Image 1 (cartoon, rainbow, N blue to C red):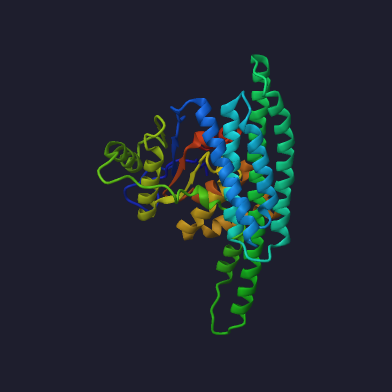
Image 2 (cartoon, one colour):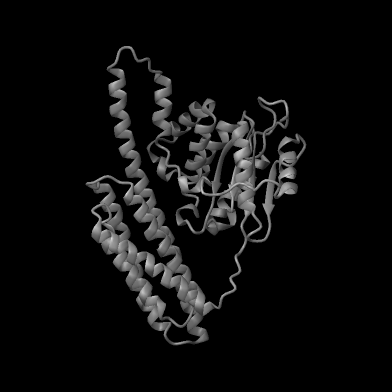
Amino acid sequence: MPHSLVHNKSAQTSTWTSPLPYAWLISLRGTTILSMSSIDRHLKIIDAALLSAKIVKDASEASEVLIPLKVTAGIMITILETIRGVKTNKEDWATLGEHLATQIKGMQDNLSRCSIPHSTALLLAVNSYEQKLYNVLTKVRLVSSRGQVEGVFRYRIDKEEIIELNRDVRIYWSDFIREISVQTHETVHRVEKDVNKIKHGVNRVEISVDSIGNDNQINKLAPLLSATGEDHDICLHGTRTVVLKLIREWANDPNAPQLWWLTDVAGAGKSTIAKQMSTEWEREGRLGGCFFFDKTRPETTTRQWFCDTLAAQLANNQPQLRSSIAHGIEEIGPVLAVCLFEKKLQKLVVRPMKDVALVLVIDALDECDERDRALILRNLLCSLSQ
C-alpha cells in the first residue's frame, strides 16, 4: 500500500477522512539580524564563551563528577583566547565561539547526570572529543595567525577554513552525543535485564512476553530530548489566532493539501505556533511526534537523531503502534545506530503510521545542516508522491 509523510484523516476519527496517513507542519525560523557593530558583537560573544568555559573549568577542579572536563575546558579557553584578537572574519570566529560555549555547557550537563565512578565508555567519549578539539586548536592557531594581517585575498581563504572548522566542531559534538547515548542505553538495558529477572522470579506477577519484547526493542532507540520542544512556550491566549485557525481548519479538511509549510521572518513566532499545535494534537491524541531543530543546540542540527526521536515519541504517544515500531527495529538489527536514513525513516516512522490519523510537526528545518535538510525534504517529497 502506498504511503506518504503527510496527513491522514481517514482512520479512527469522523472528522479526518483523507486516505493519506499523516501530516508534517514545518516552519523556517529565518535569519536573525543583529544591530550591534560586528566588532562589539565579536568581542561580546567570545567573552561570553570564555566566561562559560572558565566556569566549567573551575567547576571541574572542585567537583569529582566534572573532573573529566578539566582538560577539555582548558583547550576551549586557549582556542577562545586565540581567536579573540583576530582582526578578520570576526563574525565567523564568533560563530565558532558560540558553538564551543554551547558544547562545553552541554558536556557539563551530561556529566552532571552521570554517577561516580564514571564508566570507561563515558571517559573514552570525553577523551575522544578532547583529542578532536586539540586538532581544532592546532588549526585555529594556524588560521588566526594569518588573520592578524588584513587583506581581501587572505580574508576569503581564511573564511573558507573557518567555516570548515565550524563544521568540524559540530561533527565532533554529534559524535560525542552519539557515544554518550550508546553508553546510556547500554546501562538502561542492563538495568532492564536485571528488573526482568526479578519480575520473572515472582510467580504472582503476570508478564506479557510480547509487551516486554516490544519494550526491549524500542529501548534501543536513542531519542534526543532537546529536540522535542520541551523548552518552547505555547501561544499566549488571544494571540496568533488567524494562523492557528487556518492550521486547525487544514488539519480537519479532507480535501486540504497534505503538507502545511509555515514560513515567516525571524522572530514571528513560528516555533511557538509549532509548540501550540503539537500540544493541542497531543491532547487530542492526534500527535505522532515532533522535532525542533535549533542552531543553539548543535546536536539537533543534523539528521542523526531525527528518526529515533520521532519513532520514540510515536511509540509513547500511540501505544497501539509499538509492535510495528519494534518490528522495524528488529528488522534493522544491530546496525540501528548507523542505518541508512531512508531505511530507518520508512521502517520506524512511515510504515507504522500508514493506517492511523496522526500529525508530525517539524520546526525550524532551515536550522538543520544543509545536506541533511535536503535529505529529509527529499524523503518527505518522495513519500508524498507515492
